[in-house]
Length: 87
Image 1 (tube, rainbow, N blue to C red):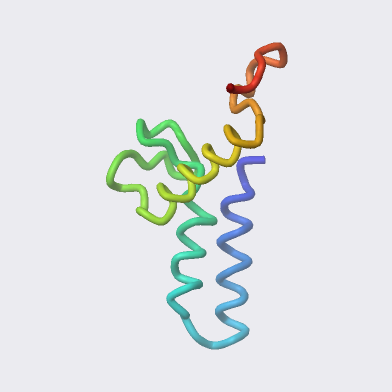
Image 2 (image 1 turned 90 degrees about the horizontal axis):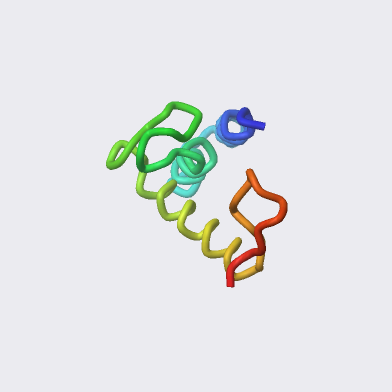
């Protein structure tokens, strides 16, 4: 499961090679794909980045991901199957 970040980034790198250009959109897409599971405290993956070392694009995606989970009624607590989603 934790390799999806690397697979996503590598797929975008492959797409860049096939079009022979590094479009700004793809630059940010690589950041998001690779770093969206990093955590502010450094306990994320794939590299264990912390704080300002995490690309801003990936931090914004993490916020959007949590918002989506909360507004969809999906629990973000992966350790409990009995806890009801918020709200």
